[in-house]
Length: 293
Image 1: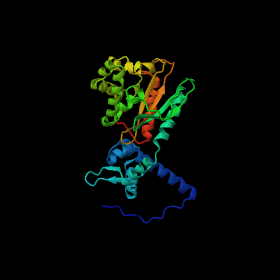
Image 2 (image 1 turned 180 degrees about the horizontal axis):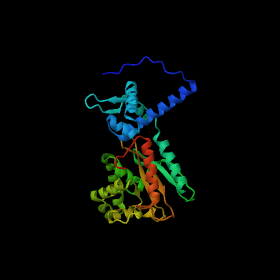
Image 3 (image 1 turned 135 degrees about the horizontal axis):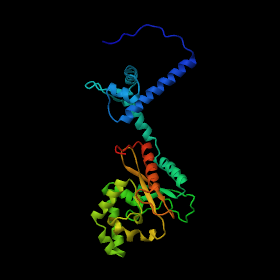
Image 4 (image 1 turned 135 degrees about the vertical axis):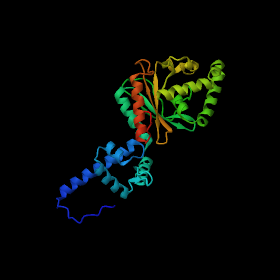
């Protein structure tokens, strides 16, 4: 039975008191919405109360108000509550306004400031991995990769990251072209880089969440790449790259850092962990959440 509204005049409040109450109510409502977003699924009233930290009756009042506003919906069959169409619309509009390159550059700037190392942002272009932003660090290395340069797919940590995360129909033509070029100068190496080797490379990168320069990987599966990157490796630079995903999980950009003379950056290295975390933070800002993080 529906509750009847009581015709009771509320006590008079000052403007400042009303304003403070309104702000508190807004904060509670936003916290409740954030609880739904964090939960990732529809909830019963009891569960919504538990995760939000509100009493059951208070949670119900807020949910009823937000249903009226379109922020929350209630399933007629189950009684469960979930985020409503207004929230979905607001989220999509906010995501549409995001500048993923600006977000990526901000995270690279933080990373370079933390580590003092050089780094760059690359995107997937029509010709493959393309550098769009370079950020020098404090180490003073005499190296710079110009914006607009297309990096090799097989012969760079950035390229192999895209290889592991982009669709096969996008990368296959470039892989074929690069293998043909390698075959001209070193046919034995090209023959060693078969589908099994590429699968092993991609599997390792997806598992680690980052891509390393080959010299950092003490794994026989990667030996066929040694000749491909040997010239770069002799410069003494160790690189690590991590993917930035948009809300659909597409690898739209990469953050790459150059380790220089601080030794090899490989699995378990603290710099690799920092690169991975900053890339994930950029991805989170773009609306991407990996369930098993």
